[in-house]
Image (tube, rainbow, N blue to C red; front, side, top):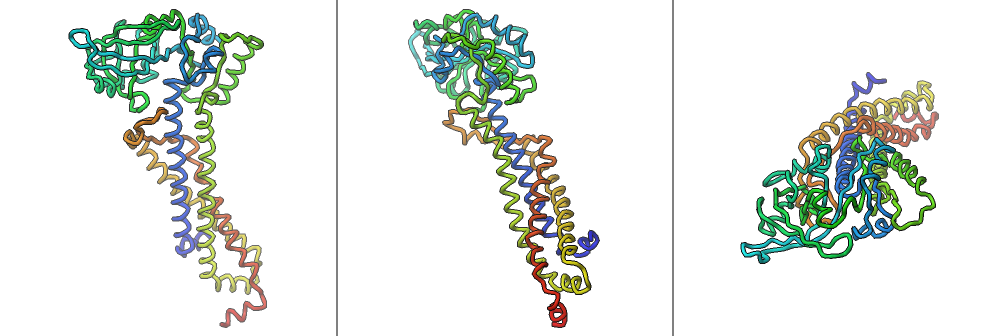
Length: 420
């Protein structure tokens, strides 16, 4: 049977090409979705949401406003407790804040100013992994990393707008945790660009202790965020951790009692994570249906071309069921061959995009959500076998549909057909 397929290339070449193209697209699209959506989720997790986040109950109800007047206190003790109970997570206590960055001239008068989204992270502690987690060092465009208290990093795009260079002094005007006005001076150590419009539009990054001094938040933080050591979000494990944390505060109705949320439970992130799960299913389903229709038609054309062959085989006594099974066995071979070729080509293109990426920074202007500036695929173990699902199913289904015509042939008319 297989030798027959090799000898008669018209029976195998077109179906294998069709299957290979479909499998290639399936593999590539799955790697694309895993890479782009995964990078988007992890970028938002690293900068704002964490894989798990602890806040006060009142803060959580107004989370979009970043209400630092509802922040947690004694966060050092809580952070140590979380690190002891959930060692697979790396915990950090960043402070998100808003304010106005004012740039003075040589006379101390305002030269330029603009609204800023600030972030206080631990940049100066030797054991801190914050700079590495946020890739701050690798994002510096001009100047250097923060090395001393009282220094800040500005987004490159923001600094250009304000006309600020490394070494200049800027003033952060905001409000403290207790509602009074806060005015705090910083020296710009450098500028950064993360490639995300939401961050590059107007960010200022300072050391966590400077943020606490400026906002009068001694041993306080609006949020405690935890990230899995694996680097990737695990929704099932995150729910287990959140449930275990919740049980310790069962019955505590205090507005300042800590609550824990998973990444999927925060704002629109749950929808994004669900999209990542279902899109792979939709892609496979679409390609199975499309390829089955194409192969069905290819099978019908092949059946017409082999009409005489089928007639001879039936006239020689071959059972219809055996002939039908033979067609299905051929389709299995074609499906496997097409899936292997398509998977290899799909992985090749996915590996190229994974390494070099596609710059889409121009498409992300004005976006409120943090998206990576470059699309990169991510090859996972699933990509090595996911193409075999549509590859095999479509060929078998196509052959089964096309082979129905075999049962409509009437043995009494076969000899008349052959004589004709």
